[in-house]
Amino acid sequence: MMIANLTLIPMLLVSLAGFVLTIYLVVLLIKALRKYLRSGEVRKEKAETKKTLGEALKAHRTRCKMTQEFVAESLGVSRQAVSKWESGQAVPDLDTVAKLCLALGFSADYLLFGRETAPAESAPAEPAPGPVYPDTCPCCGRPTSGGTLCPACGYPLPALPFPGPRYALTCGARYFASIGSAWEQLTQDFVQFCGKPDAYARELVRLMENGSDYRAVLRRDLPDSAALFLAQHLDRGYLEPKIVLDEGEPQQELLGKAEAMTIPARPASETKSGLGFWGVVGAVVVALLILSFL
Image (cartoon, rainbow, N blue to C red):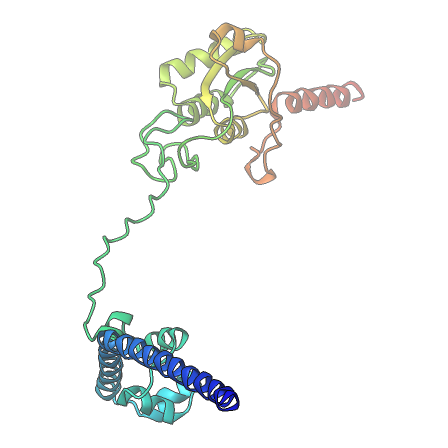
């Protein structure tokens, strides 16, 4: 009797284990079934995405008269891959989708959802503002009509705003023992390049002729290029122009300031021909010496 009982115990244990295992498998099956049922919408969405993507790809390829081989070669994939995409059997990865959009010229919205996305109408780009030139020449003070060259004195106008510090141009007589025919030329230079009225220019020349130590401020608040332009265009055979820093001080103080910028020599082609005052003096001395030996 005891032996029979001992034999039944293993059988009961095996049966109990089998029952528990069956229950566990049933629970797992129910969970899997519930998960499958809940994923129906996801599977449906994936299927629609595959179908939409494939239809869009095929429609665009056909409209553009491209072959599957051409698309595959453009993307570096096989023709079979393109065929699976169009039939909805497979979906390209994100990198391939980006390549498709670039290679075939449509948007990701069109490829994934089958709808065209009109490009946003961007406002026309405003043209970059061009350089602005002064409407008044800083050299002669005459209107320039907004051009790049002063029509009166010929100064090449820089674009606004003028960079750097401002300068003033002062001028005195180098010597005025005898001006001769230079009187008219000096007057014209003051009128043309400095913008002085004719009467004022003539009075200025007269004052310089009568006193060699007389100096006047011709122009002020000049950019460096304008100051150099003026100084180079005044006849330094008779005049002694000087460029000084203009910091807004009274005009009389400008006359005593040190030179702020060296004036380069005028080109030989612009130098006026003629003996000049000292040339005339030299010629007279030579003539007197020759006569003394006769």
